[in-house]
Image (cartoon, rainbow, N blue to C red):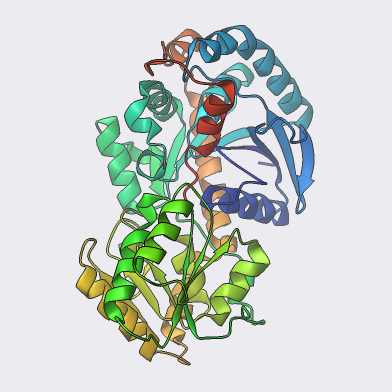
Length: 420
């Protein structure tokens, strides 16, 4: 295996778990002599069709998709064939030997079609997109469910970012994947273990990092912080990230009278994320749902005390011991007590957390993906792919009622599966 096309639901300049996982995988494949090309949606349209992002080649296409109003359905019908011809031509010139979907959105349908036309093995990785999409398209738009099911049926290998995600996917699919299915956790790069400066903040702080969406549990975090210290607090809270709950969380901060203690950092790049974690007293991941939890891994690699919800993949990756506390979702009293515990950990470093993070280095994760690629290529050589008509039929008619602007439709597609 020398050339792999990585079909990402989202990528740079968007920031999130999928984007980081795809970049890390592409980078580490290159280190093992495997060339990669990231294929993703071209939205907004002002983005270049092709560029190099931190050493990774990216090619963007207008992935028309029949979600929304009549304009979207007609655009998909009229323009999909041209997009597929362009995509297949580019991948032939690239010399792709395998197609790997990271998080199923509109990219999944185009990946299926391309894999079939080029007779390539197809690997599908779930990043918990069914529960972590803020716009809940898997609940509201049956077309996405049809594409996901078709991807799972046609894939020569299916991986999930945690055991809980794989079990959810099998329940949704209506049965196990047999030897096609496996768990490959997301990883962390070497920079997560590196020393360096911390984030400049005048007071000790606890850090919460992620997209500002309801699933991340930042609203309950602010209420628990207020309950933990009704008066003066020994630590501030820094919230890093952006998203649709930005205004609501600012409103809640004022309602709880936390204007001097809770600070919104906004969008943070990779260097800033490292500084934020290294400078924190501790890191809290209060998610209501969490397929995996890259932020928790990064905190562990830095030896920070960690407070996490006992949900999804967080239960699987967080080590036991003095450096970690888990709380049940909805238990505000325990969350407040956990924040007080982290404040008392000021100045402590937990080597057990660092050791537990070692097995999630991207060098090891990449080796697991390469083995899945090998197995998928073997299955592809011995099995027929689904008929193209059946894969096209997976879309059917979009069930969303009414109409919306093309910009809104494309924005919805871009946001599917942004899970950090």
